Image (cartoon, rainbow, N blue to C red):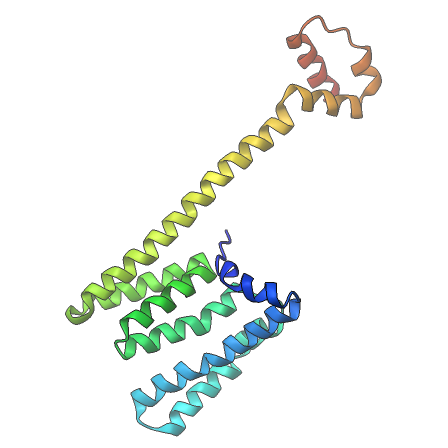
Length: 204
């Protein structure tokens, strides 16, 4: 199930430059920007600029990420750097920035809620970040449930519509006329019930 609401955020830029290359360039630029939080976190953790640079280079050269950037346009690829920016903000206790990047990452793909929920649980275990952890967990859980509920509601209506299109009397008549025109048109039907039965028998 796909729910990539981040496309609504990107839509104004695409309206200004309506070309598929706009999306590919945006994806590439955002992915490259993900090296910034990787470098910052590596520098804070190690205190060594070379280690931090190495961590950023590993991120940029990661084969799976490179394949995603070079092939098509993916919400998953947009989520990677946004999650890194969220972790960088968390590491510096920049809570507002943390919340913004978490929300943007969620909009990229619904299953981003899963790692965010795990992160929320880890933060909740620490007394100093318990409130942030609870909010992170609540945000991820609420978004996950909301999207799946909306998806289930739409699926229910699509299923009902499909059932009507395949099982209703007009649909049966059309199918029977198309498959067995002589048998259907030659059938003498006194009422709707008999007509439906003949139409059903005709297509079998």
